[in-house]
Amino acid sequence: MSAGRTAAPAAGQWVFHDGDFVPAADVRLGPSLQALQYGTGVFEGIRAYATGSGDSHLYRAHDHFTRMIGSARLLRIAIDHDADQLVEISAELLRRNGHSGDAYLRPLAYKTALQPGVPFGVRLQGVSSTLTIVSLPMGRYTSRDGISCGISSWRRIPDSSLPARAKITGAYANNALATDEATAAGYDDAIFLNQAGHVAEASTANLFLVRAGQVATPAQDSDILEGITRDSVISLLRRRAGVEVERRTVLRSELYTADEIFLTGTGCEIVPVTALDGRPVGSGVPGPLTRTVMDAYDRSVRGRDPHDDHGWLTPVHTTPVLL
Ligand code: PMP
Image (cartoon, rainbow, N blue to C red):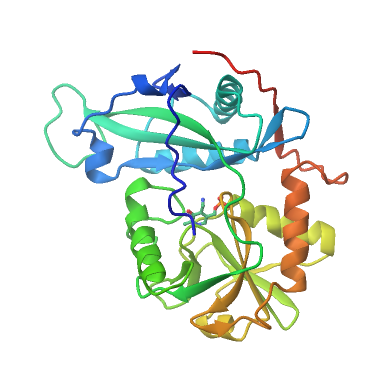
């Protein structure tokens, strides 16, 4: 579902790298990069939405950077900027790159090389780190009509091994295995169970289900990334539809008997799941609550909800700076 979306900036684009805005072509990373060898990087995916007037705004950028700073603390990656500064840097990057349409930002903070005198080895202390942010144009890439999913035979990595709560680059090999298995079997995406056999999340999205009028999503102790879109949906459903989402253990069997299932993520936004393991979900078309959520989320990200006082949007005035 999300494959192929990883940010590679086009030639002639700016990136923010190691404290400066530089042309993408000037960034050189060698094969001995520690993050490349051991997966010791953390990242985010942030969307910017066109406002229609030639400008755009970032969606929940502060929350993304707050999460990234938390992920970085886990791996002892030093980030020299706070969340406010990172939002400003991101807005400036979009401005420089002239991304006035829908766009995507990929911040990546990662371990680079052992500091002088530090002995060779897999370690977190005594290793330098850096931050790179790239941006690229990106519109909607998932189906609004529904996708098919398969339950993965790969289990989600447990919190006791490598916390899904942190967006750690190396951990995404787990997600890649699940996506690969699902697409090879003809599905659009995979749904992970955790070690206990309970529902965790999709390959790069959180999961919600509607069953007998109740809306539920796996709780934060189900080995999930605590998605920012998941949080938006919980809040939007409360405010717009008076629906309280249950955050709890979700059983696999509940998925097969659900009336509706949908996935949430920054990249994929809101995606109806209309088939699971070759069975239709509900009546096999996006259900009414899923449609309500899609509409509410669209309005929220595009700043078209007159009652929205969440403060989730950061305006960006996009005037390109020529290289
Ligand atoms: N779970 C995983 C494993 C993800 O990679 C993502 C995408 N970041 C999500 C859930 C959704 O998180 P968010 O809504 O914050 O993008």
